[in-house]
Each structure stands twice: as structure tokens, then as C-alpha cells.
Amino acid sequence: MTLKFVIMSDLHLVPEGALSVTLDTAARLEQAVDAVLARHADADFCILAGDLADRGEAAAYERLKTIIARLPIPAHITLGNHDDRPTFLSVFGDDFAAETGHVDKVIDTKGYRIIMLDSSEPGRVDGVLEQAQIDWLTARLAEAMDRPVIVVLHHNANALHIHSDRIRMLEPDAFIAALKTHPDIRQVIAGHVHLTSTATWHGLPFTTLAGGHYSVDFSVDRPDAPMRRISGPGQMAVVVGTPDRTTVLFDDFIDGNADIFWSRD
Ligand SMILES: [Fe+2]
Image (cartoon, rainbow, N blue to C red; front, side):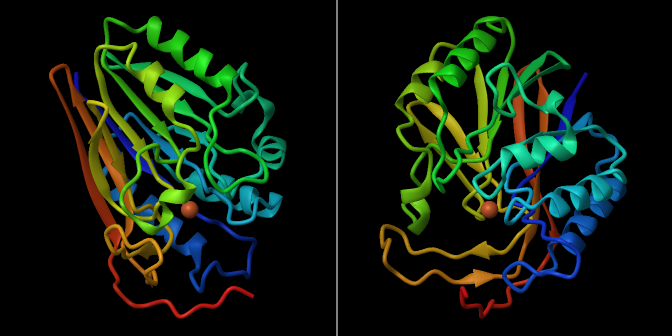
């Protein structure tokens, strides 16, 4: 009884005919779906961990709906800072919202509990978990003290010594305190930084995946150093869980180290 699921993040879809930072993000998502069909069709489900739409347009969410219809496995969704919650819900349906009002969700399967949290906050680039979500998380953890838990959300809570640390989760103390109420948090997995990382913080394991959009390079502890955007990889995470072992693998479904020359207009 092995748990296997795929995480995609930072899709940054745009309406038909548009590009995002020079990239055809819909074509990249099609390649991600092809990779799932080729290599991960045996997964239990897929999680889309936010920044689904680049600018939150309804047309981008409609496009998302069409493309993920080709996935051979169920898709569970939460949101990131580029998303627009009301527009997302208008396209996908209000059932995607939890009692918190956010796009939070719990999945119980194969002896694990997976908790998805919506860290998007209107008008903000950094992440926020409201008190109602912290309370909801604490309650969902209390129900699952006998099982390992994996948490998936858009924003990284831990600083990574990189440029984008200033837009990580705002005030993560309550989140950490909630996680510490559970004895077996196997992973806390985020997107947002467009970069692969693993870390231990407060004794908890944190991972980020590069996601489907551009990737960034970094200078350690030089937040003002120029950041290069590069065209690849398009990356998804593949999480494999047995009772005693939780593994995160990375599938780079698009290669590419070309510089992106782009100026914000
Ligand atoms: Fe993103």
C-alpha cells in the first residue's frame, strides 16, 4: 500500500494567444500532463499547488480546466498569490472552498493524511494563513494523530537565504506552532520560489519544487544581487509514501537553461 502523488505548481497560465515572461505556459502544462501520462499514471492523485493563473483571469482558469481534463488521475487544487479566489471559484465551483472560505482540503488515503492550505491573500504577494485556517489545520491534525501527515501549500514558510525570502509566508510562527502539535509531519511542500530546495526548520522538513514556469538562480544571502530567470526545468514533484518512509522525487519534464531576457512593462 504505497502512496504516490504528483505535485505541480506555478503553472502561470494565461489566456489563449498570450505568453507569460516569454513562455507558452499552456504548452508547458500540456508537457507536464504528458509526463504524468507517460510516467505517473499510477499515482493516486495530482495536487496543483497554486499560481495556476498568471493574472487570475477566468479565461486562464478555463484553459486550466481543459488541459487537466487529460490527466488520468484526480486533481486537487489550492491557490497562490497570482490567483484570484473568486474568479477561480466561479470557474471551478464553490465546492473547492473549505469551511474556512479558502481553497483548503484534506485527503486521507493509503494510511496518510495530506492537508492542502490556501496561503493566497488578495492584494499580497507574500503568503498569509488566517487564524481560521490555523484553527482548521490544528483540528485536522488532531484528527490524524495516528497517521503521518504531509502538508502542501503555495508559499514557503522557511527563508531560503535567497532574493524572494521577503515574499515567503508572512508571520509563520502560528503555522509552525500548529504543525508542532502533530508527532509525524513527514513533509511541508511548497512552490512559489520557482526553485528546488530542501530544508529542516524547527525540526520539520520543508521542500520546494521549481514548478512549471521559469526557474530562478540565486546568490546565497545576497538579496540585492541580480536574479537570473531561466527557461527550465519545468519540474513536478513526485511524493512516495510508505508507513516508515516518505520520499520526494523531482521529475524535470522540460529541460532548458536558456536565459530569459524580459522586462516588465
Ligand atoms: Fe509562481
